[in-house]
Image (cartoon, rainbow, N blue to C red; front, side):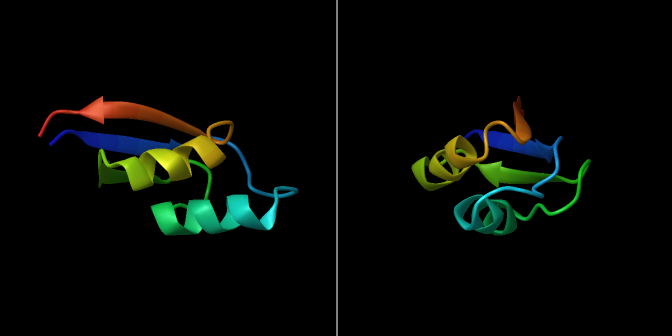
Length: 61
């Protein structure tokens, strides 16, 4: 299964509670922090919620 590298590029200040929770669930919280997750529908849904705050790239396994 493919993996996604998710990097936070913008601040969560001023965002809604749902966006804060999505960032925390993804393992993010600071600008510049990155995490690698499996490409699953649950993760894609969380990325959709915070798509304006993160960048996503596919990583080879």
